[in-house]
Structure formats: structure tokens, C-alpha cells
Length: 291
Ligand code: FES
Image (cartoon, rainbow, N blue to C red; front, side):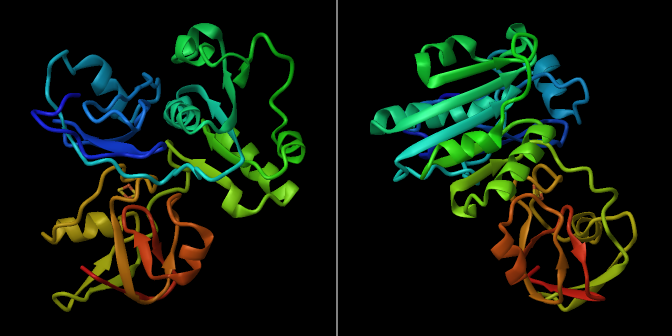
């Protein structure tokens, strides 16, 4: 994507953009090019068999040269550039943010290693780009390797490193288990989600008070706060509507949210001062929101 004159807004390794589709859907995609590039944003989109509509549309309906509305880059998966060593663990199309991180780490002259897991070589994305990094890359192809990557052993064998993981749900679950088992400090464990967790329907059945107008709305069971406020004609921004992009974050002025997103840290959840209204509910009878 090229700017119509002038440089594009800057981004940092691990950042994503939201792509707004003409269907009304909006989806987040990691930028995979080097952050120093200011003339383009590069994304990689895997065609998912169980697509919720985003990847299928981009593969089947978008034509070369067509213009799409996108957001400015945002980063929920930032690279700690001060780390002595960085370990990047990717599965499938989850390798995209790692490509930008690898370019940035190379530019900084930092030590890093990529463990890239995929089902078959033919299904691996950006294999030529990745292979160019030589022995910094541990390519793990399911039908060529016996056994899965032992993430806990990797953490135990790499002192003082920062670990980054992006991939399908089983890989992220394995990463989180390994982090817990090894006691890796949260500040050195970084996870990027690109699929929602299966957490059932939105947890409705409570009241929300909109502080700016004083209106009180009932969020019915099976409906999200986002759907409820939009149905009431109140503008609220959103993108993934699955708790993974952070676009719908709202300030909480009262009550206790039932956090179900994958954006907020444990400390941010405990503070209860912000919530994602596309997926989270309430533990109290009423929430007061800055809307
Ligand atoms: S819209 Fe993405 S987290 Fe709510």
C-alpha cells in the first residue's frame, strides 16, 4: 500500500493495522515489513477454511489496485528492543509479526532466534524470506519432525531472553503453560492472538449506565455491550469484535467488568478501569462506562 504523497504514519515491529472491508467487516493484520519503511505497509493473509469472512473476502473479492480503508498502525505486541536475546516462536501465518521483528532486531544488531512451526513446507508462509536468515531459523515442519517444539525446555535453556509467540490456539496454550511451568516473568513473555478464544456467547443480563448522557441500557443475554450501544444509536468503534484488537476499549467509571478479551494484561484487568465492550460482560449488576 503506498501513500498518496508523503510518508505513511510510522510503526514499530509487532504492530498491526485494521483493514476495513466493504462488507462492513474489519480485521486486524500484522505488518511484516521493516519499520524503517515509510512508503508501504505489507500484510500477509492466510486463506482460512473456517474464515469468519475477512480472509475469504480478501482472497476472493479484492482485486489488484483496489483501495481499502485501513487504520493507522497500533502495537499490542511490542518488541523489547533492550533485550539481550529474543526468541520468536511462530505457528503458520503467525509468523508475520516475527518477520518485522527479525528485520528490526537485525538492524539493531541484536541476538535472536526464530522457531517456525508449520504443517507442511508447502503451507509455510514466506519460506524464502525466512530461509534467508540462515541458522537463526529453526524450521519445524510437522511431517518432517517427530514431536512438538518443547517450549518449556527452550525457556529454561535461554536465560534472560524475551519470548514472543504468535500462532494457532494450541500453540498459544502450550506457550502459556510453558510460561507458567517455568516461572518466566510476565514482562519477558509476549503473546499475540489472531483468533478469538471460544468463550461462548456474549455475557449479557446486566445494566450499563452511559456517563456522558446518563442513559441506562439493559444488555440482554446473548448480546454484547457493543451491540447494545450501537442498537441504541450510540457511536462506538470496533474492529475484530472478538476481543483481540483493542479497538473497542472503553473506560470503566463504576462496577466490575467480567473481562473476556485477550488484550488487557493481568494488571490492567485487576485495575478494572478499562474493558473491551465487544466481548466482556459484568460481574456487578451495573457498569458505568465513559460513553
Ligand atoms: S473490537 Fe477488537 S477487541 Fe473489541
